[in-house]
Image (cartoon, rainbow, N blue to C red; front, top):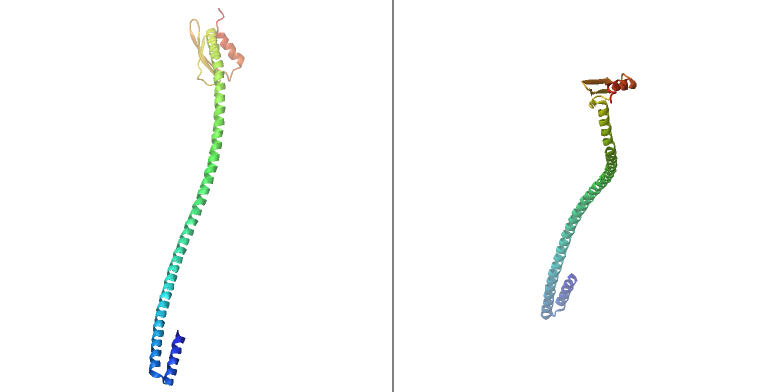
Length: 195
């Protein structure tokens, strides 16, 4: 464009020197005006294009900044989620360990309960067989000996009452200081030999 203007100026100088003056001068002026208007149009177009490019660059820059901000935010959220995941994983592992421990404890308690039920059944069976026979034997001894025993004494103390034909005699024997034979003889002395 600038070259066109310079060419036009040189053409004008040549025309002036050649003396075809008015007509050529008018043509050159029209041509120069046309070039000048064209130059202004091109300049406006270029300015609009450049302004558009600048605006596009600004918009692209802003979008890029926004995307960078979103990326940073997403990275922070991802880091937070990863930390939360690690904490949840640790809690889950702890809970799994506790669950396994509690399951072992429950199994142990079930085994203990089964053993207790088995023992209870054995005791019930023994009680069913032993207590009636023990009661029968105790009643038989009472009928034969007429001795009523106190059962809430210390293990080595024999305490009770012998109910004879005429009188009741208290019994209080410390078996830890006497022999078994001596204790047995003393108790048999209470029993009447009259049948």
